[in-house]
Image (tube, rainbow, N blue to C red; front, side, top):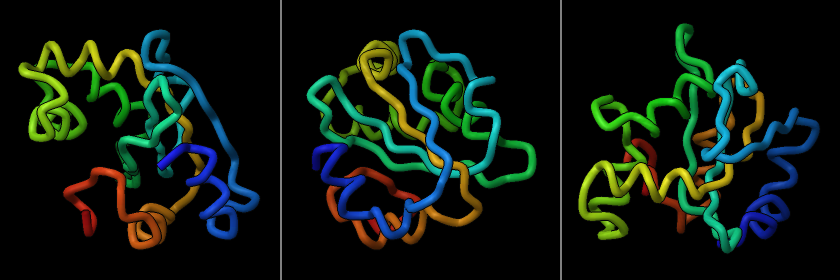
Length: 128
């Protein structure tokens, strides 16, 4: 699903949520210092991953930083890339991740609403 299609389809859920965007190749976790959800898209603007950060000690920025770590056990995006044969090693998966764009929404419980409304983005923690 294209990112703009995702945003349009979920406009009612996303309405009036604060949006922050950036790229993994110049990622700064302090730009995402809030709790909420994020959508990750590739260079073709296809949405590839939907995730969240709601724990008291985990901001969206801290969660996204995990995706750039070869050793962090929370790197579920790299694991998904390996499972879906988009990469053959964790280090290769991180190189792929560094080509991705991030769009994040500050919110307290939006992830599960979006997971239920979206069928073609990877997320093993939700329904897909």
